[in-house]
Amino acid sequence: MKIWLDGTLRDAEGARVSVLDHGLTVGDGVFETLKAVHGQAFALTRHLDRLAVSARGLGLPEPDLDEVRRACEAVLTANPMPYGRLRITYTGGLSPLGSDRGTAGPTLVVALGEAQRLPDSTAVVTVPWVRNERGALTGLKSTSYAENVMALARAHERGASEALFGNTVGALCEGTGSNVFVVLDGALYTPPLASGCLAGITRALVAEWAGAEEAELPLDVLDRADEVFLTSTLRDVQGVHAIDGRLLPGAPGPVTAKARRIFTERAA
Ligand code: PDD
Image 1: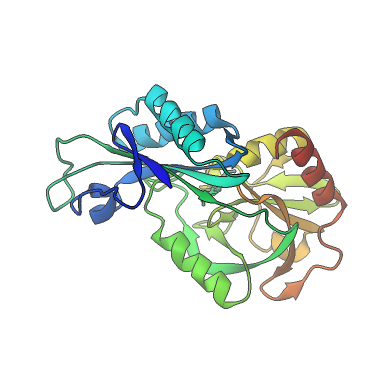
Image 2 (image 1 turned 90 degrees about the vertical axis):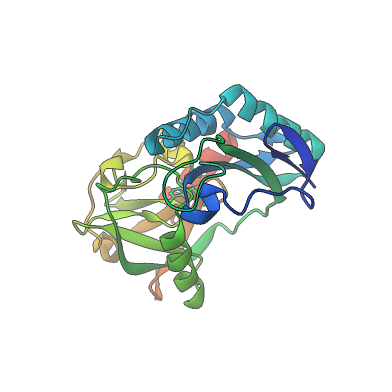
């Protein structure tokens, strides 16, 4: 397996980042996950744009998007596979111990791993922890994912594959690695970016193609929704058939199935 690290392709085995990298010591970095189908990264430009937005948000040096694009293409060419997860990581780089950034400049890593198509529906749980919709990292795809890791572990302990967060005002927000949509009385809704969710690329495409409205939704909407589904780069459109152990009969329902079909035809 070849990865890209700081300007060149290397064997993944031998590639090393400093133990003083700010991404490791204080989670100072941003990332992107892309779907790669037969060597083609889906929505590469949108992902590069979001990487730049996240980097700017953290005050990291502006990433050279031409280099990041070249790195993605080089990694994809060097590691042919039918279906993969392409990961871009861009961190504060080698730094003194502590929270100040060093002067060495950022670290860029692009890596690729095999991925699997996921089932068309899944179980989710809700977690008591909340997303801060006014936090400094809100809406940025930063590498500080410890809360997401904890919530996802809780989901797995309970036989689910995703955990859903509310926010500080009790509104539905998003999953640990996905956005959420609900169907109420035949209409499709997704929480607005002001809820604190990530501006998911799948979310934007599904909202446009399947005609969803943004709406602030109280968390208990999950008890009343006709259908619930998740969107993300690796889930595409994935129905929800259980929430906190309560089964949703008939999932994935007709609106979910239609959104999944439209998305698959155009993008997957
Ligand atoms: N996750 N919300 C969060 C917190 C995410 O981490 C992600 C992406 C999404 C969906 O965004 P998109 O449709 O652009 O993938 C929403 C990626 C897949 C990950 O966890 O690696």
